[in-house]
Amino acid sequence: MMNPNTRKNTSRQSRFAAWALAAVALSLVFASATPRAAAQNSELYNRLVQSSGSTDDATRALEQARSMIDSQRWAQAASAFDKFISQYPSDKSLDAALYWLAYAQNKQNNFQGAYDALARLLQNYPRSSWADDGKALSYEVMSKLNPGYHPDVDADGDAQLKIIALRTLCENDRANCSARVNEVLKSNNPASVKEAAIILLGRYGGTEAVPALIQLSRGEANERLRVRAITALGATNDERALDVLREIAMSASPDEGRSRTPAEAARAEWAVIGFDDDSPTGAAIHALANHENPRAVQILGEVATSGKSQRARLAAIAVLSRRRGDSAVDELLRLYDALPEVQSKKYVLAGLAMRKDPRALGKLADVARSSGDPELRRQAIRSISIRGEQASLDLLLPLYDSERDNDLKTALLEAFGQYQDQRAYQKLEQVVQNSSEPIERRKIALSMLSHSKDPQVKTFLENLLK
Image 1 (cartoon, rainbow, N blue to C red):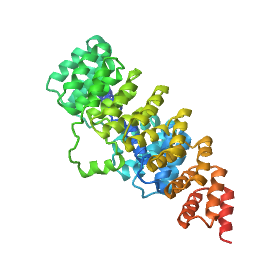
Image 2: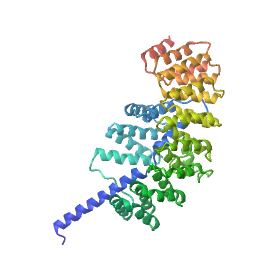
Image 3: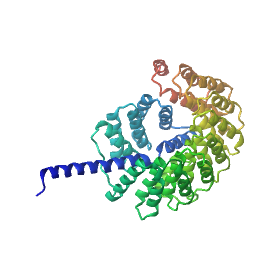
C-alpha cells in the first residue's frame, strides 16, 4: 500500500508536471504562431488599394477601426469594432472584427470583454482563419482572468518532455545550445520538437547560433522548419543575416503559380499581397521589416523594385510602410518615382497614408492634385482621407470644385464622409442641395451624411422632408 505522504508527493509531482507541460505548450503557442498583425495589415492594404473609387459602408467602417489599432488607440478601436459588429452582423469580416475587438479589450486590461469576444469568435466561427489566433489570445486572456488557469495540451507528452528538457538546457547552458539543437534536428524527433528546437535556438543560441540558422534558412527541406529558421534568423538582428534574408526575399516563392484550394482562394480575396510568414519568401520579407539594421530598408527597397513576383514586391512595400524611422519614408518616396507599375505605386500611396511624416502628406497631395493617372489620384484621395487629420481635409475640400472628372468627384465625396468635421458636413450638404449636381452624386453625398450623429446634420435631414 502506498504511503499517504508518498501519494501526496506523487500527486503534487503530477500536478507540477501537468503545469509544466501546459506552460511549455503555451509559451510555444506564442513563440511559433504566425504573426497575424502582418496579415491583417495586408488585408487593410488591399482594402485601401482598390481599382474602384467606391467602397461599401462596412469596408469603410472596418478601415477606420483597423487604423485605430495601427495607431494604438485601444479604447477608440474597441468602440469602433463593437459598433461594426452591431451594425454589420452578417459581414464576411465579422470574425476578424471579433478578434480585433478582443485584442483591443485585452490591451486595455478589459479581460472579461476580451474573453466574451473570443468566446463568440470560437463558438460561431470555429473554422475561421482567425480561430487559431483567437485560441492563442484566449490563453493569454484566461491566464490574466484566472492566474491558476492552465490550458489543455493536445500535443504528445513525450515530445513535450523533450521540449522542456531542451529549453531548460538552453536556458542554463547557452554556450552549448546550438550543439544540442543540432543533435535534436539530426535525430528522429517529431516535427513539433524540431520546430521548438529552432525557436529555442534563436532565443538562447546567441551569436553562435547564427551560422546554424543561416544553414537551416538556406537548405532545410521541410518548409515549415525553414520558415521558422528564417524568422529566428531575422530576430537575432545579426548583420550576417541580412545577405541571407535578401537572397531568400529576392528569390521566387516555392508556391508561385500553384493552384489554390477553395479555402486559400477565399483568403486570397482578402490578401492580394499573398505573402505572410507561411512561405520562405514572405518570412524573409517580414524578417527584414523587423531587423534593426538600417540596411534592411535598402534591401526591402530592392525587393520592391526587383523581386521575382509582384506579390513579393507588393509585400515589401507593405512591410516597409510599417517600419519606423525617416529612412522608411525616404524609401517610400523614392519607390513611388522609381516603380513603373500603377499597382505598385498605389501600394506606396496606401503606405504613405500610415505615416505621420509631413512629407508623406505632401506627396499624397501632389498626386491627388496633379497625377496624370486617375487611378493614382483616386488612391491618393482615399489615402489622404484615411489619415483623418484636419490638415488633410484642408487639402481635399478645394479639390471638389476644381475637379472635372466625375469619378474623382465621387471619390472626394466618399472621402468627405470619413471626417467628423462641420466643414465636411457643410460641403456634403451643399452637394445635396445643388440641383445642378447629377442625382447620383447627390445621393452619395446624402449617404455620407447618413452616417453622422451630428445634431446639425440631423436638422438638415429633417428639413429635406419639409
